[in-house]
Image (cartoon, rainbow, N blue to C red; front, side):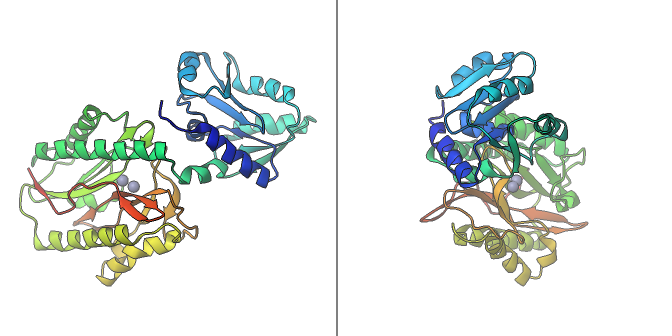
Length: 367
Ligand code: ZN
Ligand code: ZN
């Protein structure tokens, strides 16, 4: 068990339901279900009413669910249709009239089931809701921070074990394979996203998949990856040079990104709007003349998902809440030449930022 206080999370959700004029909520997004109940399986529906939290799952999880969820969650194992069983349970629950559903996470096919039921004269009013649980997830509690710190350590240990194995002539996929093996050996439960390994000119593609492209002497090698611990993700990027000392151009661009990363990590604050945080790195890179070459946003929240709220982006008006964990990942990408990105994970405490990842940010020569 993680020591997570699911009861406190359910209480906060009920408060926001009340504020929004809702009696209950159907939760179908798996990360939200995990956050509220602890259940980590792949098939479940949850209903949160003022008085109870009901979780429906299937027979495959009959044993697992007992060990994961708190006693306060009423679990129903349903072998045929979770949706059919859900109607039966809802009919039995008095006082539930206005129900929210997660409109960003329900398929059209599933939504049709309850919207059709509503048009059949059912006594419920269904209301689409967005981000009711996601907003709660932005602010991490202590048990979540423990997991994220651990996920960062696993990622750093794996990278430290991988870089000495990198050689000129290896494919990007081979490097990704070594890194993913080291992640597993270091204790990662999985990979939060497809590992990015990009060498030479391909490093100019911010979301390059590892390919059969071979690393040439003197190539920049960009590695973006993460670890998972207790369901929580880390997300880290470093850029190194392979088989030769860096050129002046490589050093110049790497230094610009490192300084943008360092100053944004030091100056980012809870309470700042996401767009102002983004500007911390963007304005700096712009002043150096690389403005157009930083084409993505500065960062994103991490937690049960590797991309979650809040956002640090030009269009992000929302303030960054205290207790959120965000990435700081400026980059400079030059088509046909290559690219550099340096990404760290930062907790925004009310006292200021704490950078969780400490792996060497200088332009390391490997191989
Ligand atoms: Zn990343
Ligand atoms: Zn990221």
